[in-house]
Length: 135
Image (cartoon, rainbow, N blue to C red; front, side, top):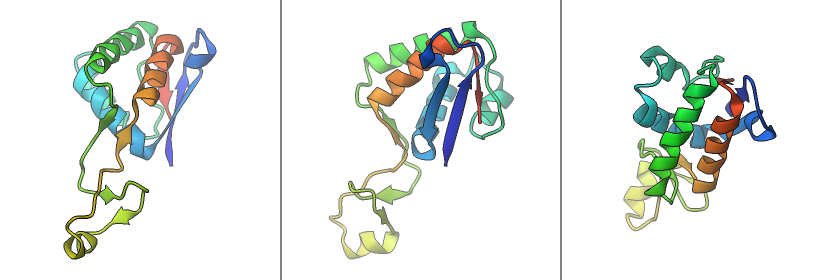
């Protein structure tokens, strides 16, 4: 499951389509809220978390979003993650609280992560999409 983000008026192939699985969309969505909350109405910010066709429909807003993501990425080169309580091993196996209790030294991380390269693709999509819808 994931988010299919469709460009409204793409100016280049990079603006036609952006795909993010649910694990990477959550951190992207959180960054949209943090970085662009003043650009988008609160109801739209909420709807961007669902496959409902929500999104800004104009290129100017998307260009400003791209600029803000660019500035943020200058000092965050390792991507972005959210710790929402769910844990996995580095190999991607889900870890339960019982697993951690039995093996407190087990190395875990949050599955809600987006890599730097994927964020760069997101920024390029924003620059070229002419507005977008999240499905």
